[in-house]
Length: 189
Image 1 (cartoon, rainbow, N blue to C red):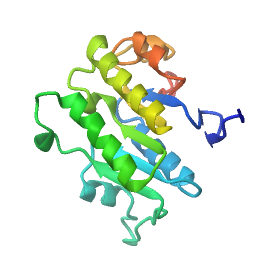
Image 2: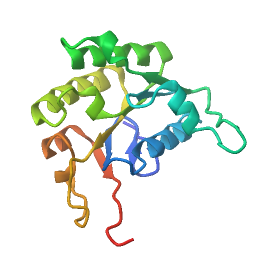
Image 3: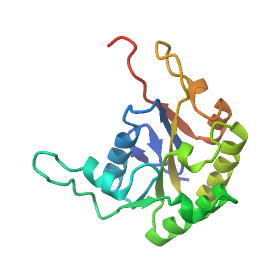
Image 4: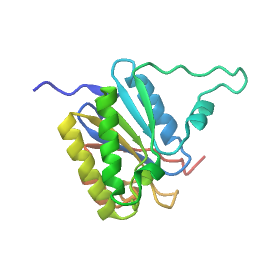
């Protein structure tokens, strides 16, 4: 088999389920959109946005002084999750089905999911998040996807280095990822 190609630097390769995690408000989503923007120069990318509305997303990528909007490549598709349309019963299973349908409809093989906490009703529970990730892994294999999952850290001591123990939903989630990288805030400045 050929070696997998880099999707984004040495952080994420094709065919991988990758995780980016960090504390709140450190720029995970902005970094993920930057990754999607770069990757979509050569591949079709589906960005599943569970946090921002279309208007919030537009405002984030509009220059406040000039009103100039950032133009994303035509290969970048953005989807929002509507929890009211999905319903509470079999929530995670229905989300996986919706992601699958969107990937097929847009003919993408690269998916960025922002974020695990919003998609998985009880992501602090390792069991619930584990079941969701198992379904996502099955989808990845069946459709030949590359997937980046964004996740949060629970409250943590910011003076300590960030480790796998800081991933919300238990470090057992690490078993589902092919690669993981984190963003942290400097404890010094």
